Length: 243
Image 1 (cartoon, one colour):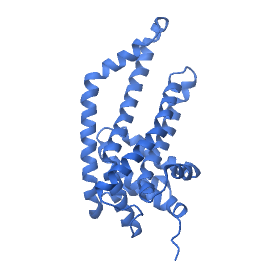
Image 2 (tube, rainbow, N blue to C red):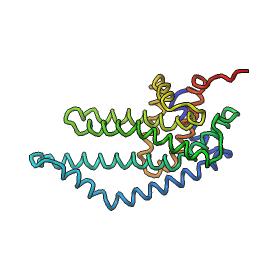
Image 3 (tube, one colour):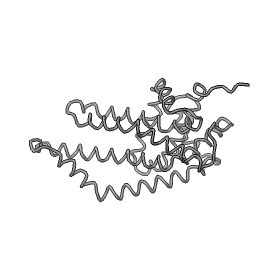
Image 4 (tube, rainbow, N blue to C red):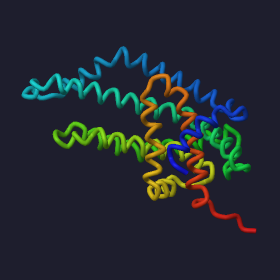
Protein backbone atom coordinates (compact mmCIF):
# COMPACT_ATOMS: atom_id res chain seq x y z
CA UNK A 1 0.00 0.00 0.00
CA UNK A 2 1.28 3.46 -0.90
CA UNK A 3 2.94 5.26 2.01
CA UNK A 4 0.85 8.40 1.58
CA UNK A 5 -2.36 6.33 1.48
CA UNK A 6 -1.35 4.76 4.82
CA UNK A 7 -0.97 8.22 6.33
CA UNK A 8 -4.34 9.36 4.98
CA UNK A 9 -6.00 6.25 6.39
CA UNK A 10 -4.58 7.22 9.78
CA UNK A 11 -6.75 10.35 9.68
CA UNK A 12 -9.81 8.23 8.98
CA UNK A 13 -9.02 5.72 11.72
CA UNK A 14 -8.68 8.22 14.57
CA UNK A 15 -12.26 9.33 13.85
CA UNK A 16 -13.54 5.78 14.27
CA UNK A 17 -15.80 5.67 17.37
CA UNK A 18 -14.06 2.62 18.84
CA UNK A 19 -10.61 4.20 18.50
CA UNK A 20 -11.34 7.85 19.19
CA UNK A 21 -10.97 7.54 22.96
CA UNK A 22 -7.40 6.26 22.62
CA UNK A 23 -6.16 9.56 21.15
CA UNK A 24 -7.31 11.73 24.07
CA UNK A 25 -4.36 11.19 26.42
CA UNK A 26 -1.65 11.47 23.69
CA UNK A 27 -3.27 14.71 22.49
CA UNK A 28 -3.37 16.14 26.03
CA UNK A 29 0.31 15.23 26.46
CA UNK A 30 1.15 16.95 23.17
CA UNK A 31 -0.64 20.12 24.30
CA UNK A 32 1.21 20.13 27.62
CA UNK A 33 4.64 19.57 26.02
CA UNK A 34 4.04 22.17 23.30
CA UNK A 35 2.87 24.84 25.77
CA UNK A 36 5.88 24.14 28.01
CA UNK A 37 8.33 24.38 25.10
CA UNK A 38 6.74 27.58 23.76
CA UNK A 39 6.91 29.15 27.23
CA UNK A 40 10.59 28.29 27.61
CA UNK A 41 11.39 29.26 24.02
CA UNK A 42 9.83 32.72 24.24
CA UNK A 43 11.96 33.58 27.27
CA UNK A 44 15.19 31.91 26.11
CA UNK A 45 15.18 32.09 22.30
CA UNK A 46 17.24 35.31 22.05
CA UNK A 47 19.69 33.95 24.62
CA UNK A 48 20.20 30.71 22.66
CA UNK A 49 20.69 32.56 19.37
CA UNK A 50 23.05 35.00 21.09
CA UNK A 51 25.06 32.07 22.43
CA UNK A 52 25.47 30.65 18.94
CA UNK A 53 26.44 34.09 17.63
CA UNK A 54 29.03 34.44 20.40
CA UNK A 55 30.81 31.35 19.10
CA UNK A 56 31.70 33.20 15.87
CA UNK A 57 35.34 34.24 15.39
CA UNK A 58 35.89 38.00 15.02
CA UNK A 59 36.87 37.79 11.36
CA UNK A 60 33.43 36.40 10.47
CA UNK A 61 31.55 39.36 11.96
CA UNK A 62 30.72 40.67 8.48
CA UNK A 63 28.58 37.55 8.02
CA UNK A 64 26.71 38.13 11.27
CA UNK A 65 23.35 38.71 9.57
CA UNK A 66 23.62 35.43 7.66
CA UNK A 67 24.88 33.52 10.70
CA UNK A 68 22.05 34.93 12.80
CA UNK A 69 19.49 33.66 10.29
CA UNK A 70 21.19 30.25 10.37
CA UNK A 71 21.29 30.29 14.19
CA UNK A 72 17.56 31.07 14.36
CA UNK A 73 16.87 28.22 11.93
CA UNK A 74 19.01 25.77 13.93
CA UNK A 75 17.31 26.68 17.22
CA UNK A 76 13.87 26.33 15.59
CA UNK A 77 14.77 22.91 14.15
CA UNK A 78 16.14 21.74 17.50
CA UNK A 79 12.94 22.85 19.26
CA UNK A 80 10.89 20.97 16.66
CA UNK A 81 12.83 17.77 17.28
CA UNK A 82 12.80 18.33 21.03
CA UNK A 83 9.00 18.54 20.98
CA UNK A 84 8.76 15.32 18.99
CA UNK A 85 11.23 13.46 21.24
CA UNK A 86 9.68 14.53 24.55
CA UNK A 87 6.09 14.00 23.40
CA UNK A 88 6.88 10.55 22.01
CA UNK A 89 8.70 9.41 25.16
CA UNK A 90 5.94 10.56 27.53
CA UNK A 91 3.12 9.33 25.30
CA UNK A 92 4.82 6.11 24.15
CA UNK A 93 2.72 3.72 26.31
CA UNK A 94 -0.50 5.32 25.07
CA UNK A 95 0.75 5.35 21.47
CA UNK A 96 1.52 1.63 21.79
CA UNK A 97 -1.98 1.01 23.13
CA UNK A 98 -3.50 2.99 20.24
CA UNK A 99 -1.44 0.92 17.79
CA UNK A 100 -2.68 -2.30 19.43
CA UNK A 101 -6.29 -1.19 19.03
CA UNK A 102 -5.77 -0.09 15.42
CA UNK A 103 -4.23 -3.46 14.54
CA UNK A 104 -7.06 -5.29 16.29
CA UNK A 105 -9.60 -3.12 14.43
CA UNK A 106 -8.03 -3.79 11.02
CA UNK A 107 -6.83 -7.38 11.35
CA UNK A 108 -9.27 -8.82 13.86
CA UNK A 109 -6.73 -10.17 16.32
CA UNK A 110 -4.35 -8.67 18.86
CA UNK A 111 -0.57 -8.44 18.35
CA UNK A 112 1.80 -10.64 20.35
CA UNK A 113 2.64 -8.19 23.14
CA UNK A 114 -0.75 -7.29 24.56
CA UNK A 115 -0.62 -6.33 28.22
CA UNK A 116 -1.98 -3.69 30.59
CA UNK A 117 -0.88 -0.10 30.12
CA UNK A 118 1.35 -0.32 33.21
CA UNK A 119 3.30 -3.27 31.83
CA UNK A 120 3.64 -1.53 28.47
CA UNK A 121 5.40 1.48 30.05
CA UNK A 122 8.93 0.06 30.61
CA UNK A 123 8.94 -1.71 27.23
CA UNK A 124 7.88 1.32 25.22
CA UNK A 125 10.06 3.84 27.06
CA UNK A 126 13.05 1.53 26.58
CA UNK A 127 12.27 1.35 22.88
CA UNK A 128 12.14 5.16 22.64
CA UNK A 129 15.59 5.34 24.22
CA UNK A 130 16.88 2.84 21.64
CA UNK A 131 15.51 5.10 18.90
CA UNK A 132 17.31 8.08 20.45
CA UNK A 133 20.63 6.21 20.26
CA UNK A 134 20.00 5.75 16.53
CA UNK A 135 18.63 9.23 15.95
CA UNK A 136 20.89 11.64 17.88
CA UNK A 137 24.28 10.89 16.23
CA UNK A 138 22.69 11.34 12.80
CA UNK A 139 21.03 14.58 13.91
CA UNK A 140 24.38 15.95 15.12
CA UNK A 141 26.02 14.93 11.84
CA UNK A 142 23.34 16.69 9.84
CA UNK A 143 23.67 19.83 11.97
CA UNK A 144 27.40 19.88 11.20
CA UNK A 145 26.70 19.49 7.48
CA UNK A 146 24.28 22.42 7.73
CA UNK A 147 27.01 24.84 8.81
CA UNK A 148 29.73 23.80 6.34
CA UNK A 149 29.92 26.28 3.43
CA UNK A 150 28.97 24.93 -0.02
CA UNK A 151 28.04 21.52 1.37
CA UNK A 152 25.21 23.13 3.32
CA UNK A 153 23.43 23.99 0.06
CA UNK A 154 22.19 20.40 0.10
CA UNK A 155 21.06 20.69 3.73
CA UNK A 156 17.33 21.41 3.07
CA UNK A 157 16.95 18.25 0.98
CA UNK A 158 18.96 16.21 3.49
CA UNK A 159 16.80 17.49 6.36
CA UNK A 160 13.64 16.52 4.49
CA UNK A 161 14.88 13.02 3.67
CA UNK A 162 16.25 12.49 7.17
CA UNK A 163 13.07 13.77 8.81
CA UNK A 164 10.84 11.62 6.62
CA UNK A 165 12.97 8.53 7.30
CA UNK A 166 12.91 9.12 11.06
CA UNK A 167 9.13 9.64 11.05
CA UNK A 168 8.68 6.34 9.20
CA UNK A 169 10.81 4.55 11.77
CA UNK A 170 9.16 6.29 14.71
CA UNK A 171 5.55 5.58 13.81
CA UNK A 172 5.82 2.09 12.34
CA UNK A 173 7.83 1.00 15.36
CA UNK A 174 4.89 0.93 17.77
CA UNK A 175 3.23 -1.87 15.82
CA UNK A 176 6.55 -3.65 15.27
CA UNK A 177 7.37 -3.51 18.98
CA UNK A 178 3.88 -4.74 19.86
CA UNK A 179 4.58 -7.75 17.64
CA UNK A 180 7.99 -8.38 19.26
CA UNK A 181 9.99 -7.30 16.22
CA UNK A 182 13.43 -5.93 17.13
CA UNK A 183 14.33 -2.35 16.27
CA UNK A 184 17.21 -3.46 14.03
CA UNK A 185 14.95 -5.87 12.11
CA UNK A 186 12.38 -3.12 11.57
CA UNK A 187 15.02 -0.71 10.25
CA UNK A 188 16.33 -3.35 7.86
CA UNK A 189 12.86 -4.09 6.51
CA UNK A 190 12.03 -0.40 6.14
CA UNK A 191 15.33 0.04 4.30
CA UNK A 192 14.13 -2.51 1.77
CA UNK A 193 11.04 -0.36 1.21
CA UNK A 194 12.78 3.00 1.58
CA UNK A 195 10.81 4.84 -1.09
CA UNK A 196 7.43 3.93 0.42
CA UNK A 197 8.82 4.62 3.90
CA UNK A 198 9.85 8.13 2.87
CA UNK A 199 6.48 8.63 1.16
CA UNK A 200 4.80 7.86 4.48
CA UNK A 201 7.20 9.92 6.58
CA UNK A 202 7.25 13.06 4.43
CA UNK A 203 3.72 14.37 5.20
CA UNK A 204 4.22 13.49 8.87
CA UNK A 205 7.47 15.46 8.97
CA UNK A 206 6.06 18.48 7.14
CA UNK A 207 2.80 18.67 9.11
CA UNK A 208 4.59 18.32 12.45
CA UNK A 209 6.18 21.71 11.77
CA UNK A 210 2.75 23.41 11.67
CA UNK A 211 1.64 24.77 15.06
CA UNK A 212 -1.65 23.31 16.36
CA UNK A 213 -1.73 20.73 13.56
CA UNK A 214 1.07 18.90 15.36
CA UNK A 215 -1.13 18.52 18.44
CA UNK A 216 -3.41 15.98 16.75
CA UNK A 217 -0.89 14.69 14.24
CA UNK A 218 1.01 12.28 16.50
CA UNK A 219 -1.98 9.94 17.10
CA UNK A 220 -2.76 10.15 13.37
CA UNK A 221 0.84 9.19 12.60
CA UNK A 222 0.65 6.25 15.04
CA UNK A 223 -2.52 5.00 13.35
CA UNK A 224 -1.06 5.55 9.87
CA UNK A 225 2.20 3.86 10.87
CA UNK A 226 0.23 0.85 12.08
CA UNK A 227 -1.56 0.73 8.71
CA UNK A 228 1.85 0.85 6.99
CA UNK A 229 3.02 -2.02 9.19
CA UNK A 230 -0.05 -4.14 8.38
CA UNK A 231 -0.07 -3.48 4.64
CA UNK A 232 3.67 -3.50 3.89
CA UNK A 233 5.60 -5.23 6.68
CA UNK A 234 3.48 -7.54 8.82
CA UNK A 235 3.17 -10.41 6.36
CA UNK A 236 6.94 -10.47 5.73
CA UNK A 237 8.13 -10.06 9.31
CA UNK A 238 5.80 -12.22 11.38
CA UNK A 239 6.58 -15.90 11.51
CA UNK A 240 3.60 -18.07 10.52
CA UNK A 241 2.04 -19.86 13.44
CA UNK A 242 2.59 -23.61 13.09
CA UNK A 243 -0.41 -25.89 13.42
